[in-house]
Length: 387
Image (cartoon, rainbow, N blue to C red; front, side, top):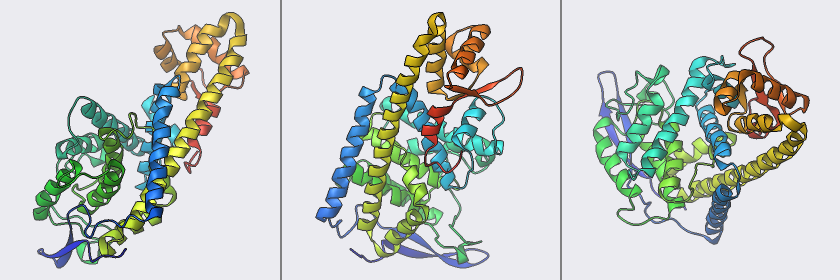
């Protein structure tokens, strides 16, 4: 359904030029979303897939280990959408204080994404509501270090921003001016809290994502915070107990469509088309995540059975194997810290795992050797677009 412009333009005059900035209409959309049988069917399928993914939490013997990697996969994918080139391996090397294969700042940005998500989830689990204050906190963690630190982390902008072009006058899109932000954000927060009316959680996440990106409340990091908001809202509204979903996989694979639909909603009010895309993203990502989790469990079980044939070396090798499930790229030193095993025992266990073809050394040096759980990492890296 096509609607009128989903908001209005205001004229802004600066010392250099005059331009128009867009102020979005309040949510929910008016007229209401046209829930055709096809659109309802897509959301029903997405909800079913989310339920299956959530159930994985109970079925996995080591759910926390899989979660560790899945959170990092979402961080890498979301950052890739913004142009960051860090791979999952680069992030894990950075977390080990090893030199990644990309500029350190790229890996640091992805690491901050992980920290921001974890901060938000801890706050929610402690009873803090999903709110503007929490969004500012998450933004502060995300941009608190590195090249984003100068862009007022944790504070809503007090100057104009724009998307595309070299200035507001030739930009592709100009979000609301600073003097309109407070009103926009007040109503945005009310919508998150089901005011003026209750909205089903999955629909709310889809609508809120567009609204947040349109408001663009920060000087930088809006895209990443907007995608973080999806995970936080799923947790706050009980759709997923753990952030196993890496929805940025679908957004990255269909990046041009993703951005095009965000703009089309603003200009022509085609919320239904966006909702179809969002439901498909959740369905595809949840299905992919559940399948990957099951394959990881099958791989781990098969490898553990092989390790059990090592005789007296079995216990220590299994301990190293378990630690590698949490961090598929590790140093001998970090594995020792994780398991409490001596350096000599760690090295002997790694030698056994290398002979079994489970682990491969990435370095060829006497000290600070880096090892990878190769098949585990290969499953995590599928469809990532980088090694």
